Image (tube, one colour):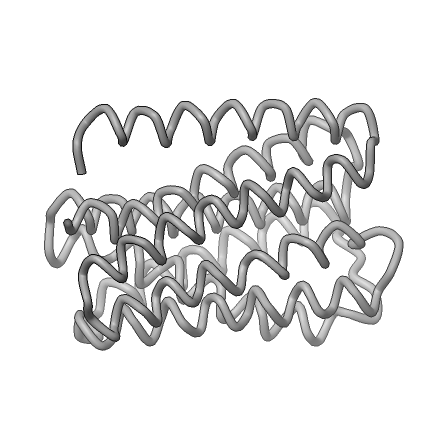
Length: 221
């Protein structure tokens, strides 16, 4: 992809993200929700376009994962107000991570690296849960299953750069790491401290991670 197009994508994406955070700060629920969906769809469409250019079903599966993130982002807006919709969000994010993992494993074999990284991520998350005294509600079981899935996706993604260093595996690694960090800040905001700074960190890091995952495919072209 030409350099100027890459810069254009990042600039537009960043501008939308900044404005979205402003809307969240002002508690403009519906404008923030629709802009969030637009940003999520932006990353998904970048991945779909790249997958079509690559013409490989493995990357279609990966792009489908980012497409699943779009409804997930919508339903996650109800994290504080509607448990049923929030659970739909968890489900769609779970489907996203399942697609990413399938795509990764169709290209890269299982290694010891992801096990070590996965255990490390789980320990980090557990420490934050204990120190912060996170109190999960009725969604605890679903979140536990989701946590195992998201941390393993992140571990696999992070491991890719170690086993096959390249620009696109670096993007995958950054995407996986940022997704884990965004979930960590979301947990802090939802179950420990509702300061806006944690929500903002979650959103900025999450969407940066989504774009990195899209660039995993884009940089292959």
